[in-house]
Length: 328
Image 1 (cartoon, rainbow, N blue to C red):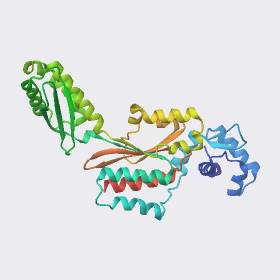
Image 2 (image 1 turned 30 degrees about the horizontal axis):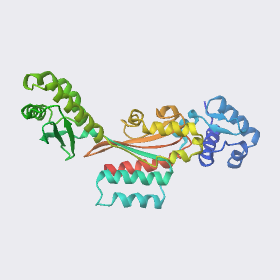
Image 3 (image 1 turned 45 degrees about the vertical axis):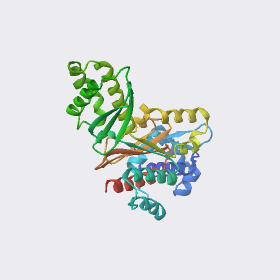
Image 4 (image 1 turned 30 degrees about the vertical axis):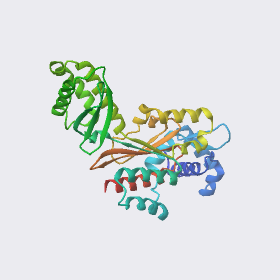
């Protein structure tokens, strides 16, 4: 069981280390608390034995462990109010009536990246968009353009090339899609094509395999393009002292480019959620703080990625403010 004094010492160490990125020794804790250096050293040794602190090989100071950060976040952290200047920067975006919601969100995460010097990411969710209709325009004997329209007015065209086009077969395919799949969320259209259209298409369409594959690929591409991911301050994380060697830099950049890893950033829980180190499923040296937002246009995730030595209280306040403004 951690004592009151140990809690105070842990809080000082976490907050000092966040500011300085240097291991914290007993001297600076004595300056913050009225107790002898021998007492502080004993308490630090106990906190290390309990797994809340770690010793680094380069000095006698200690740094918080993942467990230490988690205890700090869950039990010791006090919310930090935003400054007037930060509030003003964000309010300017949210009160700008000329911007649509997507622009408001991307601009606001750019400002968060500027304020915090961390990396921000917004993941939009395409599942809120539903198929409204499909149209096809033949270009010549082998090429046609498929136009997909969603209920949100989002349109996407894809050029399809077939070895020979029977326009009646194409029309039958489009009619089937419009009859059976209108109203389906865009990211479910491909699987519905597979299980609902493919079993019946052979009865109506001669070239069914070729035409089916062309439409399946077009919808898969459309689902990917309408599920948006936008990074702000992508290189900010590399300015942190934790990422000062080339292997770590290469590793984190590769992870930012990896679609499967980026998809892990998506948040399903409401509220502000904090994932430290190994909990982040991104990298053991980072913390990801994220929140889900819900609007009339759908839902998405905003995440801030920084070192484990992140200014937690400030990031939580910023994300709470942004979530509230977006949902309003």
